[in-house]
Length: 333
Ligand code: AHG
Ligand code: MN
Ligand code: MN
Image (tube, rainbow, N blue to C red):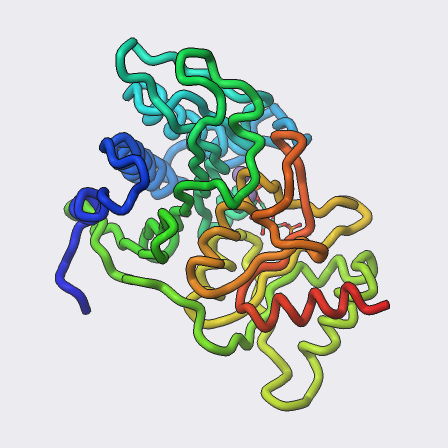
């Protein structure tokens, strides 16, 4: 185990890796760290206070918002907006992006943040792990103007940082700034994240496939064939099937143990269910930085050119060989 580096120390020590090293991104990552602790505190109270269950509202994607979706969204929004460190915020739980003007006219902020504040929120009522996903870009429009939609509709390859928080048996924050992936575990007694998983990499071989197999009849032929391939008694197969229903948790397990996460198009979600900007791009960035891959079946996720904030895409992500295999089945003939 490495020396106990705290997340705060790690952010400062690695600040000079950034192309524009003014401390701005460090302040932003610190705000995310704070918001993660706030959400962790809320999630841990589920069952004790009245925060379990649905609101009577739906989000932009027509999904019923859970009370904790709203609380988590507010925690991230407050942490980012009140501290005057970002120029724009977009969230799975908001219809449109929020433009934030700085009080400091001489030093305008350059980063926009996109979040899935509570991923896997349907699991909250049953005490199953949930997460938060974030993605950070530099704005492309001029600093002296309010942000525009195009500041958010950037290809994933332009992300400067991305990560997730996993509220699981322990709470972890895992992130990348394009220099590998590092994981930090929260010591709840001290409220401090410590570096527990330095330089995370997918194991050489993966043996887990994670998919909602209940939708099997609706999957494209190539995906059906890949599932049968995973189940064949051959070489090192059959693989193990594991599906939690929280992308963050499924991804995290597969990153540590080796595997692939799949969310193909279905009749209910013909373009796929997961959101390109809040879920797929940040996970794809982490996957690639950990030696894995992410594809939508046709191309590298991070090269998909987004046309709307809440866009959905099919998502295949994990060990390189496994992603390439499913891609080859999808593109047969
Ligand atoms: P969210 O809770 O942010 O809406 O995301 C749920 C996503 C993802 O986390 C999960 O893997 C997937 O939806 C589960 O979908 P199914 O229930 O259709 O399998
Ligand atoms: Mn989600
Ligand atoms: Mn969500």
